[in-house]
Length: 142
Image (cartoon, rainbow, N blue to C red):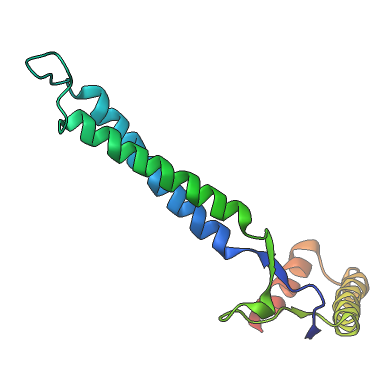
């Protein structure tokens, strides 16, 4: 294993901000549903009451919409990719050494070729069922 040159990952801050944005959106949807169900309460002169439930919901909706816009702006300011070395609790990526991989592939292919050659040598002496059982049992014993 060698240290890889490519040490960038997707920014975890973006995922965190997206979670906050989704939470605010859910809250806004609940407020909109409440607002749709609330009746408007009027004073005797026909003006809407100053501290009615509908007015409180409108103020709350405006605050949530402001928070939503702020979070979206913060998310857009974050870089899409970050280097792992700049983060606290991340380990660097390791790259598999190609020479070791090639050696492993060579040994694996040699083993399969030897097995195939042995099957060809034993084929005249054993019937098909015995040949299959012989190698099946041999492979699962180890």
